[in-house]
Image 1 (cartoon, rainbow, N blue to C red):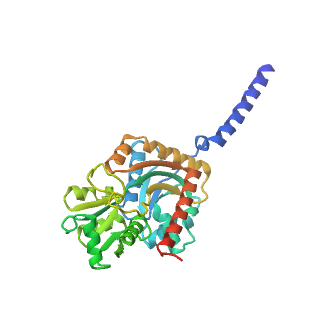
Image 2 (cartoon, rainbow, N blue to C red):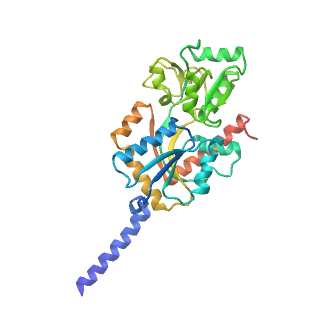
Image 3 (cartoon, one colour):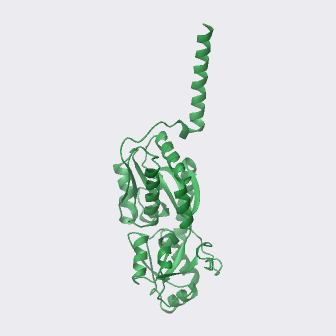
Length: 327
């Protein structure tokens, strides 16, 4: 009788303790696992920074057998990312086997286009990286410094073309802020992805791009592109000046990379993917990827990430008004 009472007390303690742990550590309480192929979706084209980011995650998951099912990365481009956003929110609501890579464009494009689908429409999972920005020109152009490029724009307003992804992300807005501070005017040519804008620069179809070093480093090494300035000091280019060191004071926008899920997924599903992404960032492959591409790790998950994205949304709303992009 006594032993039975002890067993009941022990069972009750385990139940209560388990409930408390689940409340404090919802990720640890998750027992859900994928039962079919996982799709990681991006609004950018192949070769773009966020595309490479997702493929790196998928490769590590596969190599280390982190997930029990196959992982595939898919690209849905167009309409400033709206096609991809609508596909996730409208056709995959509650789908536990769908993930989407997010960038600042997913925050600002819905503001600029007044879309009803915005960053609040998704379930935040994890932010993993922030990428620095650098301004690149073709190596054959006469622009040896940022001053040369600005002076060319001053001599012929709107003749200097900046290439980049869809307007509204950090590259396009930082280019506009730099032009306003220098009192010159650039023209902006959007491409399906930042990778395509780099290809356009290689073909001399635009005069400069402001992109992540990871998307241009190989072309700099090959002698085809030249960096003129960066948002922060870069180990690969120790002599490259920063915009601040050249006297510019425009706001440096964070080019973050992370993962979200469709709306209405279960908390245990979100917890499962947070743990899976946490395993990724602890691998040697990930550390090498971060180091070789001048990336900065920043780990924010769940509700904290949701709050961060809302803060970023407010930053972009204010900036858009200051730049005259919205009323």
